[in-house]
Length: 353
Image 1 (spheres, rainbow, N blue to C red):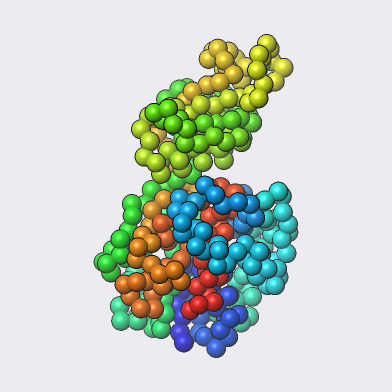
Image 2: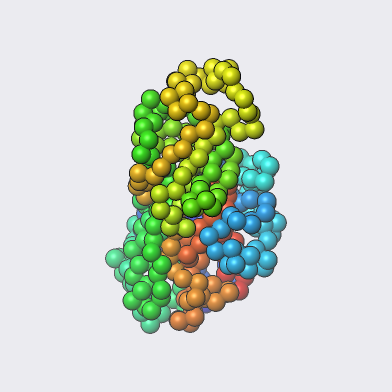
């Protein structure tokens, strides 16, 4: 059995290792267009790699039905055990799970090295273009396969090698490709923020549109020269884009739970005090002017529609074609949810293939 995997990122690398673990006689080949495997994975979590999350997944994924289907079959404990059994010890910070080393490089290299020891072959600097009659066509040649696993990204962080072209080309094979949009990214605001550029604050952020609250979350806000950033902002961008909200209010409370504030100087640096005084309150309402580019996004919204995919991630349209990870129309919030989706779809496919 010849298995070819397109994409040497999180889902591609884990599936390569897991397939050889579960099916030692299979031949496994990974094709990646970059000169270094796992480039985006190595950078995740500021290089620390928040690999999964043991908390409740409610309201954490854009397609909660598909998330529940997956995690009811392969739960996070099984995923963590797989890592532990393959040389990657883990540690928790609350619900967040990291490699014990807190090194994304270590995790990535361990997956690659263990897979290589089992006989997985890697071909780098080779771009997959298309496939036909069980042959993968690349810019460097052709590769025969019995089963093909598509584990490519959707274009977020292109400087790390992300590229959505292979997924976009799947429309030629009859797949419905939902619009690919960068998500989980900083927001450019109509209101000026230049005077507080670089300042961080713990806040409560609400996204409100037509008197409906779409998000209510505590977290760290980071001011940029023309907008706002930080995980709480990334989540705000996700809710706004996914719900197609028009001109929502982004209401930020800089002192959540504290009322009757008499002296802001007791709480904040002078620059932020002056900024808040100019707004005459501890709460400030921002409005979206635009978003930062895909270079700044953590993930993308869109991809292959689940209507084209079976529960085991095999295509309904083509026998022997599997689509996993970020290539599917699923995006999670920050906190390990996107990597957990990528790794767990890979683990599921590797067992069933």
